[in-house]
Image (tube, rainbow, N blue to C red):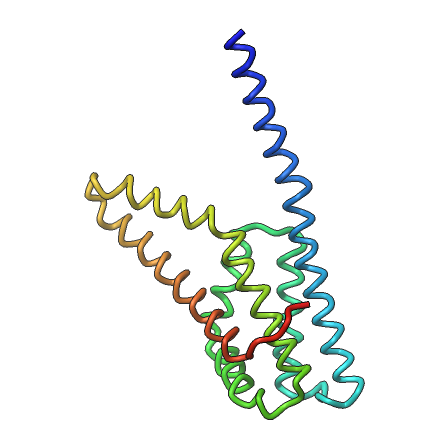
Length: 184
């Protein structure tokens, strides 16, 4: 009887994990993806209304980032998302453009600032929700390797963790720079 109960509990846990991974997680990611579509549409509407011109750096930069984010969210994987944010982080020209935009955004239409804020909010949300398991695994990996004095491997893991914290902090800073809006 005890064996049957254990098998039943394991089967229930497996079914719950299966449903979460194949349906609930996909639905949550699609919700974020559709929010990105909405932001892209709002940006296009601002361009049609003449608030921002299609050849301006604000439009080009945010449209590129929104399109790339939508593409990543289509078949979401942690590795692809990390590659995406690292690529943005390491692209000095894009970082200069973003920082320039964020310095001037207070003098632009509030709707553009709201689009920027919602974009950074969504990216920050993905960092917090989707990468938490990755962060836990990374800490376990560091803990398990430390007694064996595999300093080179630990140094590599620590460097990757530092880069992730730096990128996450960067997105939080940009979220703060864009102000506080109700997220759509």
